[in-house]
Structures are given as structure tokens and as C-alpha cells.
Length: 291
Image 1 (spheres, one colour):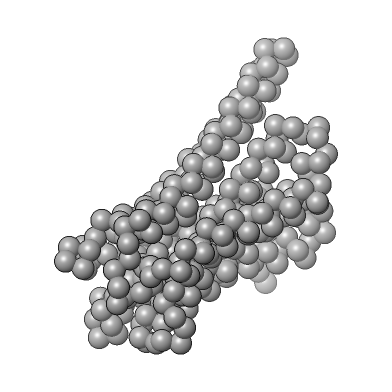
Image 2: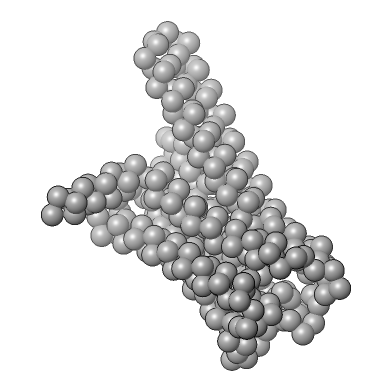
């Protein structure tokens, strides 16, 4: 969760990188809010309760983007309007909220597919409860950053223990949860499709099932890759660099830009994976081109 700004506004490469980073952050904030607005303003989308966890993902993404933007501005302007511990807490909490929103969404999708005949897993009470639990987890996991100096405190080197804790709670644990849920979904769909194929011996059904399996697999792989590509370099830098042993400036800047780029990719995948929303956007764009 390092910003690309570490050396001040006079460093031209860092300044350019920060401008690019701000543009990307604003872009994925805009896309996340477009998704939220589309779901909430269309009754058909809103009535599909499985869209609620994805709205939660979009909201946490937008929340993280605002915190990340404030973090960059404070570093860029070298402001001290809030304590570094509070800043670290807010940014890590925003990251946890976003990561565990993906976990909640994946977990709810798994239960809805695996136990499709259980109404409770599609009920408003269940979905709201799991989303609230996700927010509580994000706050609790970020509390150590309000008690000890972390990545936001440039004057003191954060402890390796706190860096390792942050890496586990903010990256490793949610990535494993999302991956396990998506693998379980893929395996379940594959088994069901195979049973349908064996019982009906219908080539058409088999073809549709294979396409669906491939689609789920691609989404799973893409989501996992974006998580790993975006977040791993940041935590690698946090864990294995010291004031005496720093990465080259270009590498550090590249690592910093990977994070917003991966979040932009996640937001695009969120829009693309929802077929009705994707179709609506296509129709709106088509109408605008005609006008």
C-alpha cells in the first residue's frame, strides 16, 4: 500500500507516476459508482438480490479509491493534517473492506449455487448480515495500524511483524478465500453438468455446459491473477525492503502503479461479469452513437 510518492514533489518521475495513479484511481472510482447507480436505479437489477454483494464490492472499491487518493495527496503535499497511525488505519481498513467484500461476494455466490433450493441463502437478511460481518472484519483487522507505526509513518520503520500481519490479513487470507470459493463453484458446476450430460446424453447440453465451465474458470483465473499481480509487489516491497536496502526508483514506481491498474481491471471485470448490466451499457452506448 505504498504510494509512489516517497521523495517529494520535486522528484519528476514520482510526480508523473502520481498523476497517472490519480487518473487511474478516478477512473475506477467512476466505473464503480456507475455500477452502483445502474443496479440501484433499475428495479430488475435491484430485485436480483445476488447483485447486492457485488454492489458492496463496488462501494468498498470506491471507498478505497477515496482513501488512496487522500493518501497520495498527503504524501505529495507533505501534509500532516492527521496522524500517520490514523492514516495507516484508514487506508488498511479500506483495503480490508474491499478485499473481504470480494470474499463475501464469492462466498454468497458459492452458497447460492451449491444450495440453490435453500431460500435463506438468497434472503435479504442473510446477505445483509454477511456484508456487515465483512465490514466488521475489515475494521478489526486494521486496528493494529492505529496502535503502532506502520507504512504511513515515514519517520519510523514499521516492524516486520506488523508488515507480515498486514500481508496475511489484507492479501493472503482473502486471496485464499476467493480462490477456494471460485474453485468450489467451478467443481460443482462441472459435476452437475457432467451428470446432466450422462443422464440426457444430449450434445447440446454438453456444449452449453462446457462453455459455462470455461467462462467460470476464466473469471476465476482472471480475478485471482488481478489480486496477485496488483497486491503482491506492494507487500513484497513492504516486507523485504529497509531504509538501507531500497528498490530502484523505477521498480518502486512500477509496483505502485500496478495496484490501481489491478483495481481498475477488477472493476471492469465486475461490470463485464454481470451480463444484464453489460447489455444495458452496450445499448446505452449504441444509442449515444446513433444520436
